[in-house]
Image (cartoon, rainbow, N blue to C red; front, side, top):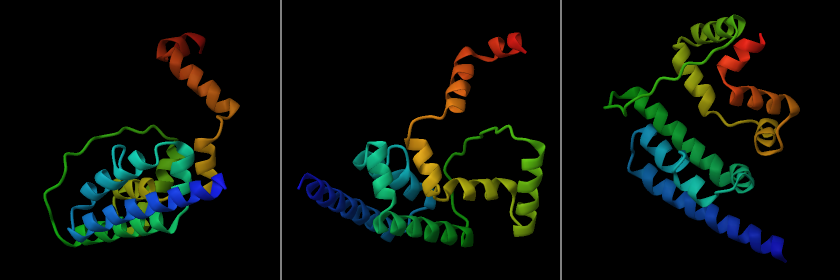
Length: 160
């Protein structure tokens, strides 16, 4: 009976989150505003589903799929009209040259910038397997990387 109560509570919470997202979507905000308020770190989804398990369960619902559709609609509308933009941040990502060349080739084929392609890829849903890895226990290799990161660059250079 407890599982049924949890499912009912999750369904109710998912419906409430979708309702908030639909009201915001109806106001036709910039996609960045919609993302921040609904899907962002301090958005309604993460405030409502505040454990990794609850978030993963919600991301498997039709409610979440509809919210992603709304985000995609807003992104498409914004491409059609110039608007004032939110302040942007820069992230530097180190990657193998072969990966960079692959992204460059894909971006060229799609006739978009590498930046646009990478943002689109970041915004896509993480597949089920990847999501489980994020919420499950870390792999031994991930634990080793975390230990190396904690040591800092000076320790890594000294070991090399």
